[in-house]
Image (cartoon, rainbow, N blue to C red; front, side):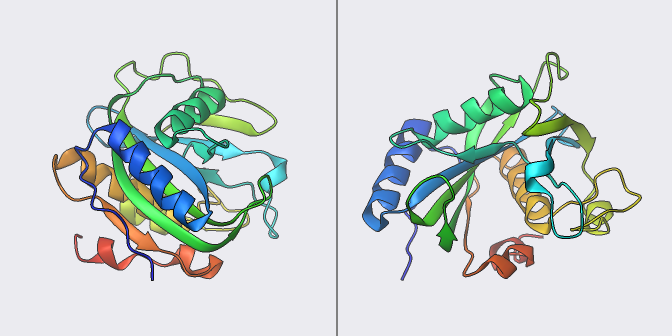
Length: 213
């Protein structure tokens, strides 16, 4: 049985970090942190395109939100800002807050000897018009703000190659982007939580998001 702590989107990041550390430590899980950075009007989102190391079986290198694994002992709110800076050059988005907690009990880390992962999704706003954005090859080959249209994105191939410039775009990044947008636009709402029982479930829209569409 997995029970998430009660966390509000307006909770201090120190408290979020504390609760995340307690949760992950109790299960001996690793932690990952990703961030959805929007423009001030919430209609553009910062995406990064991964390098050849992430090529899928159909030959595509996916687009995703900036982020990655927290290092041992590293707080998730600091980990996500480090990853954002390393992958895109963007350092300090405003209005930073927690948007969602995800559990992946099946996940096995390639870099740390852990089984199971807690993922924290953060949300923030870039008020610099993307000044200083730059990718970090070979891990990140492109980065930039892209117009977010839910139904357009759902039509983009999730794997392989295609005509849309964001191909491939795995489904969970679309759902996570929508979650983060909701939390930023509606201050004080409860954060999203979801348990992914296996890798295939990452492509399925979480029930918590269905009820808020």
